[in-house]
Image (cartoon, rainbow, N blue to C red; front, top):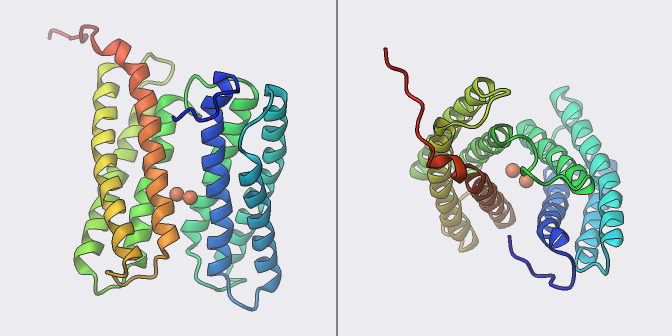
Length: 275
Ligand SMILES: [Fe+2]
Ligand SMILES: [Fe+2]
């Protein structure tokens, strides 16, 4: 993570970019929800706009803090609104799956962004408790979360590209299949390594996840550039393309942190069984 706030303590310098990242993500989620609502749902549109304003003002506020107390007070304040936006997203999802509202928001997209709000809430809780050993959950649970989200992104891209873009739709679907497999493998590892120290298999898995995510990040970057230059037909706004790209870059940073932790066991001899 970049340290760009030199006058505060290193601890805040590490946490602040993460908070800034997620505040912007929450703001953009509010915009995406609004854009996908039907025009007649004026009250929901108003609430989405309100959330956009709340997180836009946090974005301005989240610069430098004169002392740790101010930063921690800011963290507590954001937690309140992240809980509210989480509840709002779940409410929209409830209305969608019960066919009480229409519009163009995929229910899975709303579910996805509600999971991201919960992830941010957990992260803020860890910052508040000064517990930053792992990104949010245990190493493997964090992988499960992010691999699922990378698979979802690929599914959203495939579903929002114009059907005539057959080549790109195929590529996006291939990424979705690859990440769904990686997610299942991460779940298996999570269960196998429960209450146990990380092993060399996990080290190899993290390397595979990093390779796959780097390729997906490159694909998202190419898609973002094509969409921004109007060289592809789709229902994907350039901001959404950029949003999913930034999330892939964030996951690569999480993978980096995980791999740093695992590097210490990499040189240990692999346990073998002689049958
Ligand atoms: Fe997001
Ligand atoms: Fe996402």
